[in-house]
Length: 467
Image 1: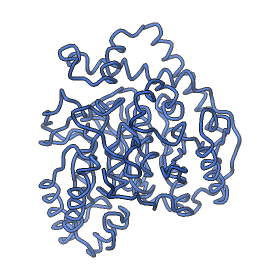
Image 2: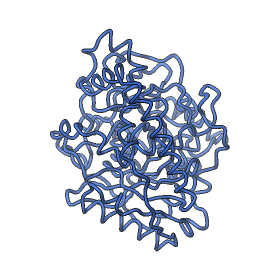
Image 3: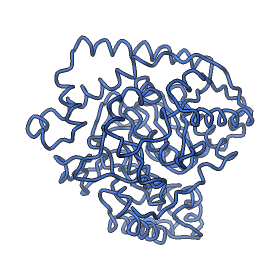
Image 4: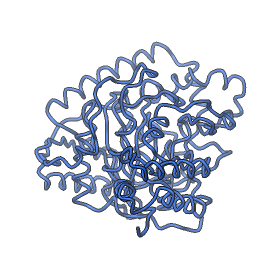
């Protein structure tokens, strides 16, 4: 297969099932590409080449003997380095955990292993899944432009997926950590309904907001991956018992986006945003209209309070996890995570209770919105991109860039992020389709219909570059 590393997961799965290509051949090709490119891109913290080849050989033997497990069988993927992987260090992007090796797999890693996936390695992330990469680990580079932030906290997931260093990856999202890198790197990502995917065996940032989801180069590839690990887990009492659809089987639904009511609030889309992003999202909405969707004007519930509250949740809930380590060795923490934990340890409980009330009110108002529309279309980010050399000043106003992402963590609602064009800087621009709880199948089907009508998801970054 030509450009094997950039073929879609679904296409490679079909070729593996037909025995046109072997998992060993595919895995070897991607490991070679990682070796050639990731020294510059820095998307992996740990590459597990020996494990990957052993898993690929096992998958090949099973498939040759007629024991095909499904679309993830023999597919090389990357896993964000906060998901526990038995016998493989899991650092959480932190100095204090740099040598931590779990004695068991987390549920997501286990289910992917059970589905026959091949683990290429553990992917880079912001320290503690919060604000910045720890100085000891360096910065992953955006494959579209090395001077620009590739999004975070699932930065390595976005970079590796966009650069053809895996077919798909695991990300997590507490305030935008799947959506920011999907937007910045030009890939597709799913922030699932809170509880749709088990969080057992994953380091937490803020447990009442944390979600785990797939990142890939198309909605169909995300559907294949999500189907392998979504669903109830007795090890996670917050996981939902609702049945898991066959996301991949449903993605080619006969109606696609036809008849879907998509809410559009141009005041919300445009407020504080740049003209290029607004124009690209308007154009994306028009594509849905051409596919038979109905564009319905609506009024987005005010997000100011919940965007501010989302940061408070991260501070307080991360402090509950990091308290002992932070008090023992505060100097081992980077600036932003250290400041967040310190703030969480002394947060005003009355003010925090107010954030809880604001959250409940917003959840109710947003749920009411979804009685009138099936999904809403919104930006990911207020602006095109952030230069690494401007990142510190950018982080001074965290709540501003959370206005399009954080509210949907606070509400627990799912979103699919996908690319819709490029800025004049040559950077990808993405948008979100947001739906009511457990609407992932419908959102993926609409995203797939959009990607059948456009080719933004097929664009590839100009790598290798001189890093």
